[in-house]
Image (cartoon, rainbow, N blue to C red):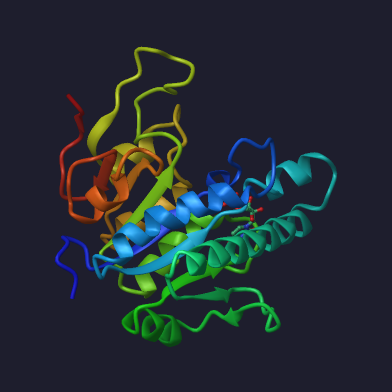
Length: 247
Ligand code: UDP
């Protein structure tokens, strides 16, 4: 049993965390950095299911803008998440963390198929389960995969690790007076149309099923450790809190 506030977490890691200094693709050094962050919570005995994104390689929406059928492009995006999952598996195992990759698209030569009860068993046995190919269906993103998996695997929280340190009232990259929320209700997060925090479908699913969401920056100090200890970092989204700005 972990001594942290959250014993089982669903960690959503965006594909961009694997880019490093490159314009595109996977930088093995960046994968090692992500693995080191994950190891820091693994050693606290937190059970970890990790949903890997694919945006560093391919996003269906961009493919479809360039003329590829949207569903086909989305399947290509899902394949990108499998490549990332294998890269992260390699990095995690090099740091001494046992893992299993489970894919929502059947790919028996490289990954187990996603089987819920098996994923739970892996976590109980101290393996990090890396969930690839999102939901296995097109027209959604890995955020939806993350919320579905967080619910069915009974995670205590969905942690969305990104390159922005939380949810802001305006785009912080374009507007210097943007303010970060410390806490926000699902209702208010969904109503914000200026800032895309997470897929609305994913947020709505978490809202309906009372799955709290934490949005924070992965590569900032020991943010992930602080997050599992329940410290106030990034933005916490739930049905129970008030919407409040950070100091
Ligand atoms: N995708 C999909 N269904 C899913 C998950 C992902 O069709 O359940 C596709 C979609 O095209 C998406 C791409 O895979 O753009 C890569 O995932 P995402 O954009 O969520 O990656 P991230 O932004 O987290 O790196």
